[in-house]
Image 1: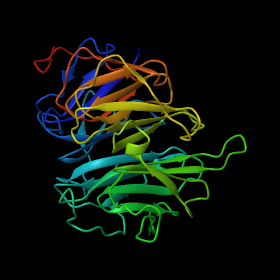
Image 2 (image 1 turned 90 degrees about the vertical axis):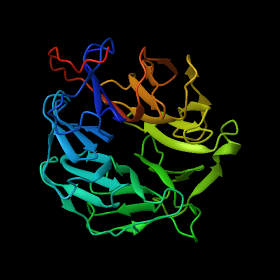
Image 3 (image 1 turned 45 degrees about the vertical axis):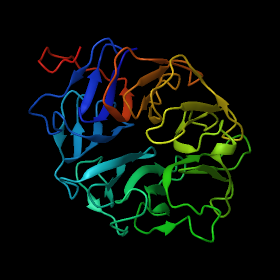
Amino acid sequence: MNGTILVGTAGQGILRSVDDGATWHRLGLKEAIEFDGVVRSLAVDPSDPARVLAGADAGMCISLNGGAHFKRVESPMNQQTVWAIAFDPSNPKMVYAGTGAPSRARMYRSKDGGLSWEQLPIELPEFCQGVNRPRILNICVNPVRSGEVWFGVEEGGAWRSPDCGDTWERVDSPESTINNSDIHAIAVLPPVDGQPQKNLVLTVNTVYTSTDDGRTWSGKASKERFDGMYYTRTVQVVDAAGSTLLLAIGDGTPGVRTRIYRSEDRGETWAPALLNTVPNSTVWAFGAHPSDPRLLFAGTKYGHLLRSTNGGKSWFKEWRDFSEITSVTWTPFVAPVKAHPQSIN
């Protein structure tokens, strides 16, 4: 692999490899992201593989050299924990970010690729059931309808904006089929080959789908579909057409049993992928880059990093373990690593 792997953790900041995982390096002691800090989200600029945004417990941080160094962007998110970041793939200058526990859950927007930020006009409760303080776990931008933005809150519902975040509507409600406010992930699949756009909303225990722009939804309890496991963590769209999807599911958090399921029909049917090593906890995050949809990464709650080189059909564990993996990504950009005492091999 020619590129850079970035692993965000709770407790070791960001770990980085530029030699296909043979060696790993932590950020230096004078970086904006604390050496032993928490990084909840990572996002590579789709227009520039050297630009990486990282959501940390210090706020929003940016790298211009593929994650070798980060500086904090002065913003309203300073000293807040950033849980989710999403670029608009049709307009990468437009970026969205969401914060959460232990800070207040709020949505933010940048119109210059992440250099400056503004808070968006939506109020979420300070406290909730289940996790005490809400956190925005996922942000999704419609890949063919620029300006349509979705986000999901654990716990606080699924929200959609038609106008780049200027206004918002809540999708779940007691009257809706989606009657669980614990939202873990959202995906929007573009129309293709005569099939309509398809929206997916993952609650903690169900995958809901809609093919009529979110007017109606259908879903079935995950424990009835996925080998008795209920904890529906996240979804990854593998290809631009949205034909192939990956689903991470487990028997709890952190869980002792987990699987990655793969669909080749936009989520109609699912089959378990081959895991050559039994993961030590629920798969928590996927990492991908559109330059090579065959190369994928997945991280577990207790620090296993898995790799697939065939679009998610089979997975192998990387040689080393990490602390809690909260986010993972890779970029085709490579910057040289200088020898420093933060090597962890």
